[in-house]
Image (cartoon, rainbow, N blue to C red; front, top):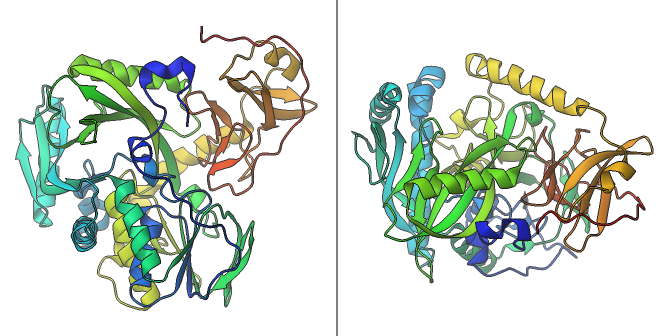
Length: 520
């Protein structure tokens, strides 16, 4: 992704992980080899599941819409930890101590499996053990930190209470987890992909799945042909096949990340504010020196307003507290939160199906995604898994879920309506600058128009192909983002993120006028 001229001060418009790792060139699907399992989606959950199954004698085909590890996993902050802000006191209250312990053990196991594979496969991915912190600068929040430490220690997790951290902030209290880790996620997963291939697995890139039909066998229709298998795993972050209405139980969020260089050594450790007043932070070594990652400015996908302004506010915070030498990278993460804060990992619905799902990692995909690989491979192999119960997708915790369900339902209903009737296309296009986009009214339809760097006008339907919500323009990433269920589309309408599987329809609008350029 190029760095657009009106945000060059924010550095390269790309994730550090994508910018500092090789591209891939796996073939597209032509003829599928013999297989038992189809895994859809090649991020950390999909690749881990595929690798674990293939190395246990199961024949696996892995399908990826674009290039592997260039979706959500390629844009993470890559914290490998079971300290997930403040969650264990909540889990004990709403799920009980046994299931809270399952959650913690699963994520610790995900961390330890990554460490074991790094050692076993000799993966050069900057893997390093470090301490994770959840901190607060608000004295009133200290009691919640204390409760979390007590809960985590009760569950056998490596928790401690501290009042000082390496951060240059007035921290009042923090919970720490020792022996956590950080790494370069693409360098790690590209080697997992190599190991999967060496074990006999097959990866097909640029192979978009359009349809899944449950049955014996399960049929998977792609743009390049139809496959069938006894088992199918949907690891597409947001499920592209949704018989159990996951769209009513997932809340999609995005957040901004800056990769900066400091004038001095960055603080050692991984940090996140318990109430999101301050950013999430960690350091990362590179061949050209240390990069300090600072993330924040969380917003619901498609409802972030001026995203460039969000990056600029984050930069202001970074410069206020740290001696920033330069801003080298900026990108956004995307996360799905479940209503009860626990991921969905397991059979996709209550029927006697062999379709499985992994989603809703809540911003902690490195350990949850690795745990998902272990859980799903065990389920497919007919093995008992010690943590599967807490992640069971068909659970429902009414006390934990009722209020978020009502709130999210109201939010989606508002976005489906689409707000006020937009301007006519001719009027809007006269003032549309390079890099800008807006939804307009044209011949009785809502149309999404934008201008590229050459001043060309692009016009596509403004109606998301998932469930008919009206998309909004993301001015930092030059994309159309759905405010209901987080589908994302390029300016030409091509699907970037699901759950949508169909592109936005191209529209023809011929409106000659001078191009406004507000970037000068």
